[in-house]
Length: 575
Image (cartoon, rainbow, N blue to C red):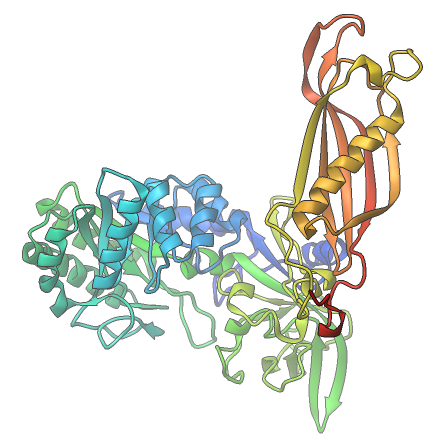
């Protein structure tokens, strides 16, 4: 049953996913082009709140960023009260950037690197989820290196000796790279006694994903809470937190039904209530990714060509499995299709069957085989629904160098570009030939600040000579070139120079140079001069701050890396 919270949204009946209308699809196509992923903020909020209202307040909900790491999605769910489960350094920084309280963040993953552990300690997240005995030692080393005097909160990920049916992908209960086998946990007690800066506060178990039946989820919750009690006794610790996983599924295919959330909530709430009678202060966590975000998104792709091949109709679109591998199953030829809708026409009653393919040079680039899209014509906009999770981030976007697509958030009537598509230059400029100049540094901005003296005045009239501002521009560009190319770049020309306000002796001027576009041999720069302090009288030293700073001049220019930028052995100077 579709929640009443979605009454104001157009929702696909079989899957419960948001379905864009033609007006919105055309707006996105005109403003941002296709292919593009579009996410609906109202759906995200409604979906989260509908679940939050049914689950016990004693259960904390964390969003798994692996499902969709776009900061706009994370921020939308943060505003509803979701914490974060992260599995990489970038995901951790995204969660921190959008303002999720570190005390509502856990870090999960079987191969955490030193920087990921160090950042988790530095940010003070709720817990690092350790997945091996060796990782416990690494957490101790990083804690010592950080200089902290406070022990780091750690949850142990456990691979249990029980399993349940009904998941689309089993993550535990058999030999796995994830977690510590339950029979090995008691043996950790001696090791933990020696790790002064590692404090085990509880346990994490993730049984599987894409559960569409409530019973296995309830059973998992009961078993995990019982297991946590037993393991806490084995290790001699108090249980402060238990993560019972999640894995709530969404129905992608015709033979699947939506998860019975009222039934699920009733069973899970009862299990948690019973557990908390003995452990009233223990934090119980459920982590969800796909369930929260999948239904909020759609891939919009436009049909470029329609053709017949030996009796079969093909619609060849501008986006395919390079952007949405999950829509056909990782590594497999399409056997079942995601909900796919021709947004440009009503397909009901049409006998036409069409195979929808993408732009790739492989027969596996098939989004749907012999599906009903109506009488498809070139220019039709096709919507692949349930695409808010495991879209471009879980797809081979580098294949054929088509690059990453635009991602757009619709919030009410507003459209926001929340990730820009890769340009051709973005793709090819990342490649290097042997002997190329060094990679540009991490900094792409350079700032200089100067107090203008009376000697800079033009003809004693109190106005600073424009040539002097141009000189400051050149100094900033030179500094930026030194950062980017080791002082080997040269300013070739100014494309545009504009003086917007006069500058006077005594003003404090900040000149900022930025890279705006990069090619292998060219660097486009954008430069601006800002007045941050104004001289009240050119003859006196009295000044006043300028809030906000005033832009007095701007320019764009072209930096050229001198040729040759590579040396052959024959060109090298013999000492």
